[in-house]
Length: 290
Image (cartoon, rainbow, N blue to C red; front, side, top):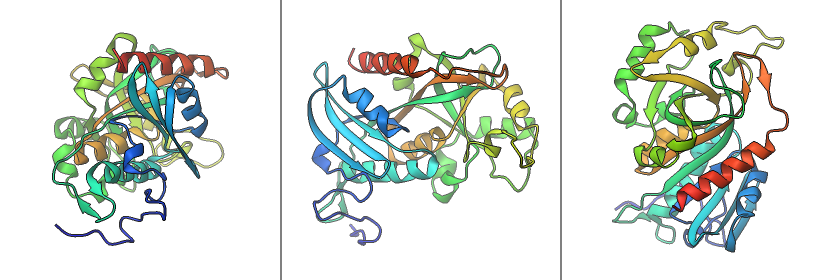
């Protein structure tokens, strides 16, 4: 087996991986990822017997126990580019010997749950709902950098959307990818199922117009009106397509559950959404340990 070069897998002096500053023994089999570093503490407040803490830039991690189950909580920061860092470094912790830089012969598969906030684009899915991402539609370009992408995307759904919505040629071609059936079933009792649109930005890429004109002013309408079998696009955020895509390529189980703190169709927004998010954290932890 080939040995990864130092610039490809950077190991810190203390033996931790470069950005997230974790060692293999710090990582639980179940990982909750969040965008906001502060939300890691809101999760770990529920833990007992915390045995790992680290913080570097936007990457904060804590590993502890909830009802006897070992869980890692880790912040990714915002965006698919950060998720690219986090997924590769989690996979390195799970599947490489960091001393020899050689891949382990037996693959370790992680269960990774994203708890996030997002905005609904469907008028009948109200603010303060919880949405589970059965699929992600990537409006970003990240996954196209990896050779195996055609093998993990949902080709039929991707083709159906291409036929439904003429897409500007200067924008990345949207792709659809599925979450873990097992993890989706864990949280189905309290969530609204839907496809999550992952954008590479917060303003123009999510159809927000402040001062700069948009390339495609009808983008949200195209997303709102898409139907494939029983599926429709329910919400916007900035991470799930990268998590689902890289997880599928690497062999990890992925799911995203979001609190919908705004509704783009009705113009509503909940400025005091912390309580609803904290309730979601408790629900996710409880269902992970049932």
